[in-house]
Amino acid sequence: MPKKRHQFKYSKPPSVAPASLSLSSPSQPSQSGSSEHHDRSVNELLADLRRTTVSSSTGSNSSSFSAATAPSVPPTLRHILQLPEPPAIAPRRPQRRDLHGRRLPPGPPPPRSWISLSQSRHATPFSSLPEDDEHGHIRHWALPGAYAPAEGSLVDLTLRHMALDWTQQRDWNRFYVYTLPSRLRSALLALVSEIYAPGVSLMDLKLVLSGPSESELTEYGLDPIDVPVLNSDVFSLDLTGSLGKSLTLKELHGFLFGPKKAIAPADDAVQDSWDSPAPIVGPAHLVPNLTHLSLAINPGSTPPVSWKQLLSLAGKLTQLTQLSLAGWPEPSLTPNAKFAKVTSPTTGRSVQYGGTGPYSHVLDGDWTEAILVLKRLSRLLYSLEYLDLTGCGDWIRALREKSDGEFRLDLVDWTGDWGKITTLRLNSGYALADNSSKAQVLRFADWIDEATAVERHVRIQRSGQGRSITVERDSLSETAQAIVNRERLTNLLIIFSMPY
Image (cartoon, rainbow, N blue to C red):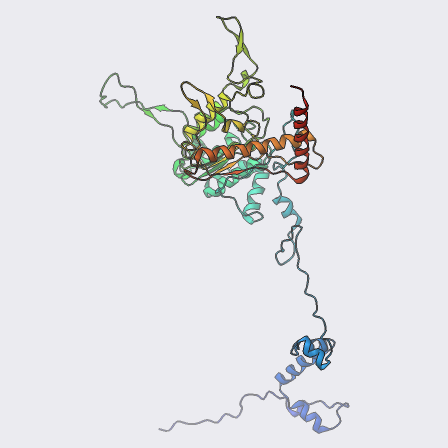
């Protein structure tokens, strides 16, 4: 049966308005012009409107646009053909740059509150060189390889805000801080130690690295924490500025390893011998993979740090590869006995009680105790690759000196024990101001010369064997160098002019 074919009466409406809607205008000269005007489609009307807008807006720049699009002519041909000179190219929009000449990111500038937050108000300033009897803040360098969020990033701003408000954060977020990723916890401790005025305390270390106490976890129905597993990927611990202020080495040693505990044998266990002592559990490594440790302090910190406690701690941190002892005093096991003397019962004469006296380095040139302490430290920390001794310019001479021991010479071994060290930082931590005195300039120059002598000593001792070493040290400006040269020349002339 054939299909029925319907012819639709209506089709797609035309794009041109019907004649019944046309408006008569007195400005139109004739009816034919009006019909031509309305015969154009909507797209043609829009294109004509765009063309009119562009031509009106660029009418003033039409000459420059045509000149820019016209083909260029070499200067020689232009002179022969007597063509006019082309107009100068419009200057480019100046680029936004900061005070250091770097290009700023596009968009509006950041709020002032962000900028003030990113600049630490409590950070240790790079102060000028103090006088001989004064101690100031020194500049500290971060350990290489330790994680630190990009400056100005969201993570950096968040952690800095937490560090500034650490008094509230450690109370309100005590059940959440220890759940952060390990690298964020390390960065948070470093910022708290740098920004928070009281510094990192033992309670803060426990909260960030081991979480709340077991009683608190049980009270709120939380599972116990397996601390060694929690800190298995914690590699850096930055306590710059906290040691000697809110934390001691003894507290740190007890927290990281804890006391040894004896295991009581079971009642049905058979012992091999009655004389055998009870088994002892070794210290539990709270941070088993710790490789970066910063114990930097500011000179003159109270109470002073102890080298004896450092040697005790170093015996259990043999895996350290980066260590910072910036600002530490001269190596001594009895620093409080520097001015003490005892009377010998045999001879009746008074002798120095400690290993180092008040004039041992200046007059006698005796560095025996410092060399022995550094030698013991090097034997314990034989995996070191980076050592920071910023601010220790008064005693870095012990790194290259020798002392007479029992049938041998005692010295720091840079080929065996510390043969892996490739970077040794011996900066002063201070900056010379424009109005620095002559004594300050000379003292600064002595530190630089001593760092240079240590570098030369290490290179000679290794004599091309093992790893090469880089010694980071300060440098003198031309003005300061001229002062040093003039003063040293004057001293030489005085020495040569003296009668024999």
